[in-house]
Length: 416
Image (cartoon, rainbow, N blue to C red; front, side):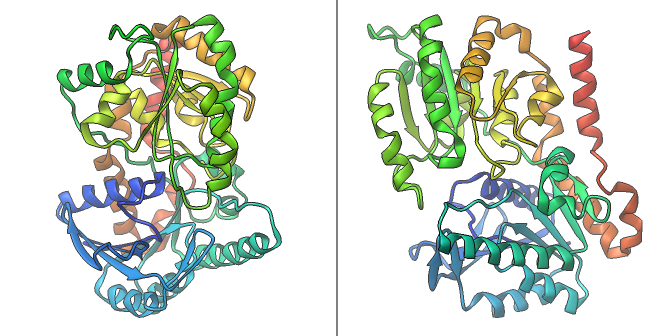
């Protein structure tokens, strides 16, 4: 099958959305499908055309930036050209250009599937309000033109103003793809010796609280920083390891400046590691005692990092955002706290560090439920059904996949 994936930012850009599409595209290509990614050339040094892990990448030059959005005059003609050659068009929102691509699918009689990854929330201001209205209009237009709309959980679909309009019409639930590269015991030890030394320099391992996210306002990093005094009172040797980019993040300069005094205050406790890749990222998770997801708004719809942690036997302290609370709720592998409540987050971290074994679940079952191959299979079922006729997909509308039922059964077994 020839599949066209369309999104604004693709790798090497780091975000949950780009990682999702990369994992899905690689899994589909590994299964023998012809996958092309149409995206922005957001940095001029990136190649216009590239083959990466069996996936064809076509990047369109950016003429103008509007906040985090981009304008690409050459996008339309290339989208038309590629749409003619494909069997199914897969759009990833938020994305300004989605309605035009969806319309091309309609004109050409090609199935159009739209995956809605999260709500877009821009900073306050008259201009951003105008941009937000335009994006909402574009998203709604794309949704109406699409044959099917996909999200990660029914929880997020029910609470999202955008997704809820499709809940009983064409909304489908597909687990997101999660995968990490293997690492050796030597990699784990090397990471521990590099980052987890005590204040006296001994590499016998401090308690490690993890966060894996770019430094952005919606990630709620300040909630964790405010929770630290209570955690350190109970566990003085605890430390925070923050994996993810933290310098020169587009649109986040003011946020970074606002947090700078707190980072300075906790410079011996809170360590920003930057972007980790491959075996080093896996070693990061294997050295954690708890992972925190203190996100603040619906730009976070799930938190793939939770599954990455859980598959490495690491419990999670997650906020109660729709969708974000689901990995912990489904598995029982952690605690859910109120959004933005640093006292509740501190207590959740203390509870997990005090009795980590209490939160352990089957890492293998969790990994299997969210494998890229499993995600690819679910999408292929949807793609193939749409090719044969839309009437055949009504039985799966808004129904959670069997993988989620298996996770809840595991949770109930442990709880009993």
